[in-house]
Image (cartoon, rainbow, N blue to C red; front, side):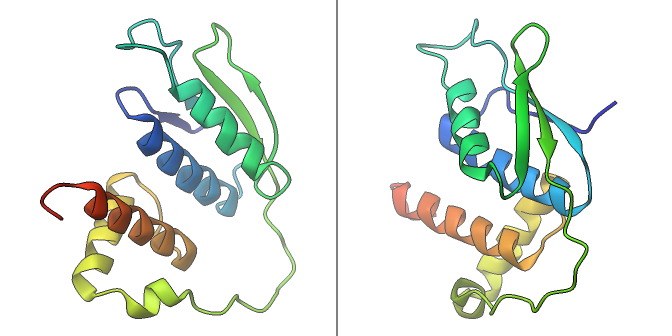
Length: 144
């Protein structure tokens, strides 16, 4: 059985962020094959969006994190082949400015959000989650 991410009930934007973070995390862990469940969209209110959002993420990550993908039986998701983790030692990238400048409360929120998803909080994933939280806070009427 392969690790599985179920995106049912999420908006397109939420699914896009979660799928990317989750795929990057599982590739870093050395997973070779994972499954991303989108559903077929039969119960969507309006046009189904998750499949298209995930396909865009897979296409964007192709070559970097993803080597191949195919629809699962029934068409409700994707079986994704991840790129093998790099085994050579390289210099770590410079710290992301968003991590240096993030308030402790914002960093805690990002760590908790990743923990809820079962994702190990690497610096790159923390920075991405902080950016997502900031974007969500900007879009919300109350700023929270």
